[in-house]
Length: 100
Image (cartoon, rainbow, N blue to C red; front, side, top):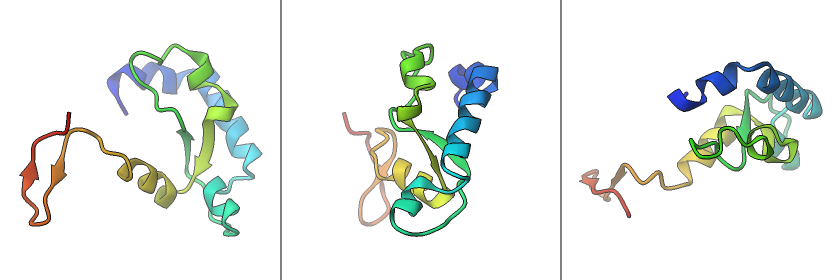
């Protein structure tokens, strides 16, 4: 968890919103359900990522339309599919400089 987000994730507002999302999804991964699979969810994911600039914007952090319940596999695919701008490797496994 990022340092700037710790207070948010400990807040009662987040805990209440998180529980609503889990209940809405019946405890199942929403992406897997859309594909006809029934896999337990484990994490409430922000579709628009939380940043230091929007951490206090409830239209991002607590907006039910911006949240989905995901299993580990779907959550990992989401984050690994986007370039993080920090680390990348060539086909031989050599570290490349960050993309600008």
